[in-house]
Amino acid sequence: MTKPNQQLVNFIIEARKRGFSDAEIKKALIGNSWPLKLLEEAFDYLNPKFKIKNQICIWLSNELLKDLEKRANKNMLSLPEQIEDILRRSCVNTKNSVKEEKLDDLLVGMFSRKQ
Picture 1 (tube, rainbow, N blue to C red):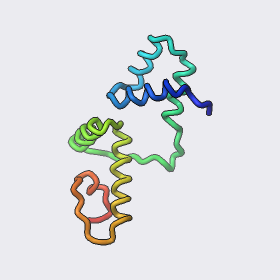
Picture 2: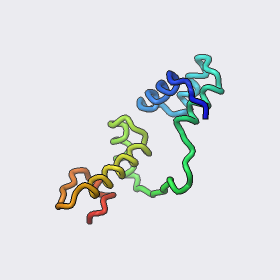
Picture 3: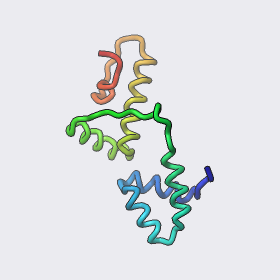
C-alpha cells in the first residue's frame, strides 16, 4: 500500500472526530480540488481491510446504541472505535485484577467476564 498524503490523512481524522461522515468529507475535499486518487489512498489507509476473524457482529438495543453514540461523540471516537475501547478496557480490567473489583462503568461491566 502506498503511503498517503499525511496532511490529508490528518484532515480526515479530524473531520471524523468532529462528526462528519466520509461522504461529506470526500465531497468537501473534491470541491477543494483534491485528486480522487489521493482521496481513495487516504481513505483506504484509514479503513484497512480486516480478515473475517477480526470482525464481530453484535445486536444492540436502540437505547444502548444511543448511549454508545453519545459516549463516542463525547470521546471524539467513531461508534466502532468506542465499542473497541470498551471491550479492550474490559479485557484489561479482568486480566490485571485478581481481587474483587468495582466497575464504575456500566458499559465496561456489560462486557466483563465477571458476573
